[in-house]
Image 1: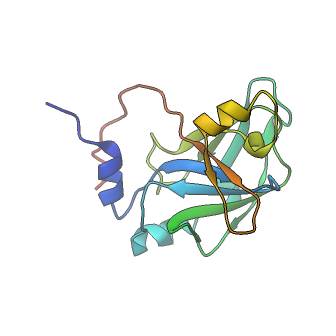
Image 2: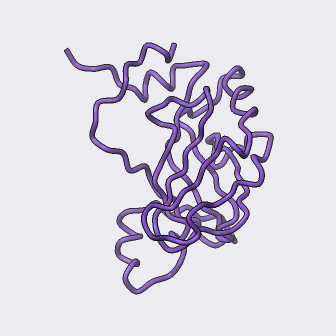
Length: 167
């Protein structure tokens, strides 16, 4: 028997979602955390609106400074970015040159999809990163705005916990 598709189950839920990917603004002081839902049901939108900055943790992976990036604000209402709901977070300082793990400890986020690995420096030009960025990251551009690089989810290949709490 094939295990159920966890993302499909989450997207069908009115009470639970998960992190899909993170978009870093060019200033590196704003993050847009895209969720698995393509449209938020009202009960889920209300639950996500209760996320507080102290429930969001951004921690460096390895020897990266700063080791922790503090979230100052969860901006409401939850915006649509390119037609998709995304949590809008304002951080105190940009992260360093390395990987960070963003984790949201809130009951509206599935425990398997409540964290993600990303880089604050995806927009930074580098002679080493140009081919990596073009092949590993999606580039989102506006009409007159600088490009925003979107880091996609990097998930381990493990069996997630049971879906019994989703519906």
